Length: 576
Ligand code: 4AD
Image 1 (tube, rainbow, N blue to C red):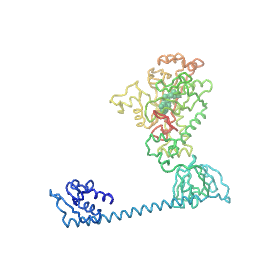
Image 2: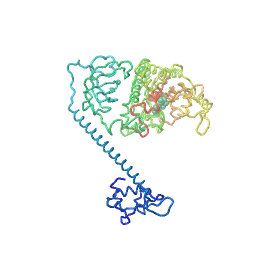
Image 3: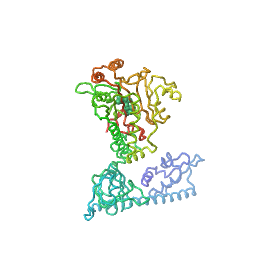
Image 4: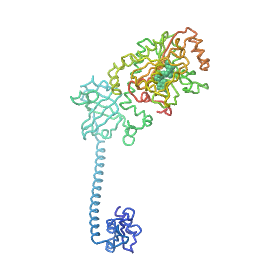
């Protein structure tokens, strides 16, 4: 309690009584005020109170104490009073010392602030000048730093990391999308206003010479830019608005998705997006080298491919239309003119599920091939996955990002496991993977995500799971000749993710396809163009679709497909 508070408390006392009460049992030093109604607990509090009264009154006061073993108040004994007065003196000295220290600290802080302010003001006077006698700098991007070692360069970028060492040295790790570059600024370069107020994510241009680092020192690329001149291009906010206060790796996922435009600047998210770019190029290169043509079918459609329940519908100039679930049907129409075709387009699924492998919008890599058998189709899928992995693994920069994100990854060289749906049902039951209620899986039912994941993880190898029963698959899948209960269909399952590819042969007989529409209760009218394929020179054909985000989640060991696209769309999230 402060001295003034004590003094006012003393004033409030019943001065006429000139007594201060201490009850060792029922008193309270915090809430008491020394009256008989609210006595203190210790004599020290009573002495402190008296000591804060006007001097002329102090002598007139008596301290009355009710000992713990007594029911009566009696005047404090001389020895107890002496003891309390000593304790009060010690406490007073301590408080004085504390107050002096606090005042000193405050003064020091103020001086420091003033000094900083003065330095900042002074720094405004420091202007860097480009030394015209130095060689003309060459504008480079960070990825080209190695081949430009030893010569003067100029490089633009974002301040990815910042470390100030003393007042004459500053390290910036610069990021420009092509790589990271450690830059060192010394002396006057660190004394300018911009240097003293530099923040993460500010954009800068740095001039200087890139040199190999001496043995034992490490930095990205094994080199460092010794800066001789620099400028700020655009300053990022500090304080409450600093990027580190907006989002971090520890932030709640909902904040991370809301701030994804900032998250993608991070080392991990940007590496995923870069590998994604290389993977998409590898798919294109794979198909290109195998003689496929790329097509880009419409996303606004009036037909369903994978069942009506996951269609996003919208008003198309007064008519009902949908966002495509798959470009498959359009790819099929391209076979007679272009032969084997593929597309890398967005597909849309109104999936209400919150699983880690479902998006509402995903990138769908789909291919369609004429005149093939079901076994050819399985080979196509297996070869594509292996070839795409080999292609990205062969690029040193991409490989190092894959290794950064998934250190245990090795390209898979063995043949993929090929397993029929019926065998998978048996595997689940033999391996104790059951329904929640403990019952067995039975032929004919869908194998949901969880048992599928359990099986794939336990087998630990890619599995081409084939011959699913017709009723759990799409209308266009043909039954096999040997067993009409099952279809020529396939899912590719990968450890850690589960299904990444879905494919099948297609019913190619006109009458059979009409029968399939009837069975599904689908109106054939909007599909006139699809049915025409079976009229005007039909052929056995098949194809598949691969979810690019699921492929990446597997390749890069990401927990969810939401991390594998730029701005994920899922239930309740359509921002940024
Ligand atoms: O198995 P699906 O539904 O097959 C088709 O759409 C076929 N028409 C493709 C074809 O034959 N051309 O989907 C194919 C793949 C799945 O294996 C999965 O990787 C991905 O697309 N996929 C999804 N990815 C993310 N979010 C979703 N909601 C997905 N739905 C399917």
